[in-house]
Length: 307
Length: 242
Image (cartoon, rainbow over all chains, first blue to last red; front, side, top):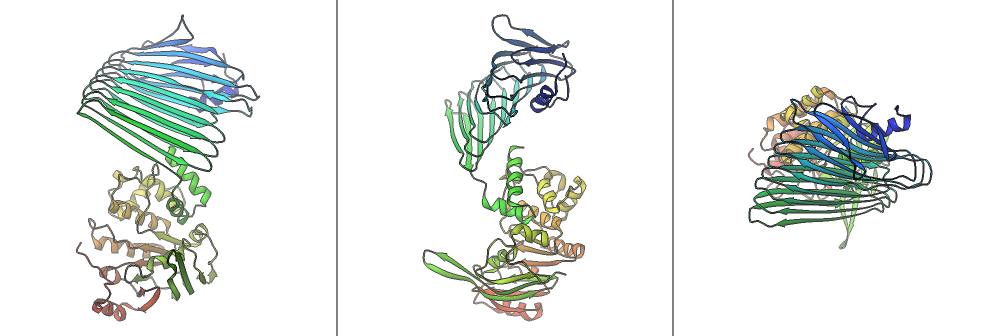
């Protein structure tokens, strides 16, 4: 089935795809399967007990990529999907997920994706997830992604999430458990504007010795938008954990950051850094001395911050 | 060479103790290649430099660049007219890289080699720095040198450096002086350097001592420097071994 121009644009926004990918993929459109392709090492199977798919990734010679975009172009859709990723021991994969909603009328549309990752021993996952809302419709675009991560011994996962534009409301819940020598890195970028609401909730249990968690959240809240950031890192053994939460607040926006560190072991080394505030006047002045207008300086600072 | 004129510049700051004259009726015509402002801390050097750049608005007085009245121009407009400013304490930016700032300063898209050339000029091993963010991971000295490199990339006709020597102790003074000489050669503009360092004052064509918001003395190096060095009353020079 061919994609129309709106679908193509959404695919570009959420997955940086110009057209249907060549490798393994599963495109979900308006609450149903649009198209799918599997490869020798990546299998995708429709669930029989609930909506969603199982993605099984085998160990292969070289790293493969699988795309799982969700696109919604009709209003009034309430999409709920369970995707389970089984990354076998020693596998190495790039997973690109994301959801784009483009509506032109006043009906609300939502997508709640529940993604579970079972990262095998010494497996490596690079996971990109991007959320985007477009279209002129004043219907609310709501996305509530839930990510559940289990990383086995020596496994690693890097998760890059971005929500830059057009999502009216999102509650993002991420929880993870790590076994020995596992690594989890999360980079989150969020920009809200208008009356948008975005909430992030991280909860990580570090259970295996020598494992490491690093969460970096960068947020820009404009206009009258509201953002909330909650995180709890539980260091239950000799491990390292670090969370960084930086936010730029503009106009009448509000940002709450409630970071929590829980050292349940004398050898758990946990660090948190948080900084929330408006753009520093001296940053604007510096860029203005380089010839930028105040507005250009502001854009430069925000773009750099969310890069 | 650019010509910058300050006419009867006054700046009065208000605080809870009332009004305080920071700059008191300063008039200067600056058209030399190397000009140095020196004088005791708190004497008004940096304030005067910030008034020139438009960062601080004078209470009264006029500023002319090559005969054009720039008193009411914004910082941005002054930058476009050919003024550049290297801050004493450069600001950090999360997410903006060294390469970004040098590109913004130059006003055009530079190749990686061109960015590296500017960084090498200030003694930074370019490849290690070009993609680094200008954040807290950089030391004060590194930031200072990046600030100088970015100001060089501006290629402005009138460049102001506020205490460029501060924090560059790991780098040699001679290199810093060479940077100023090369910048002057390349652009053919004027450099106004605020400094306490005898070795920097030594390369100046003209030294202006600013104290208590006024011009205390003003002249060529041969006339002014011996007096400064003699003066034990005000520690104009705080020469440190580097």
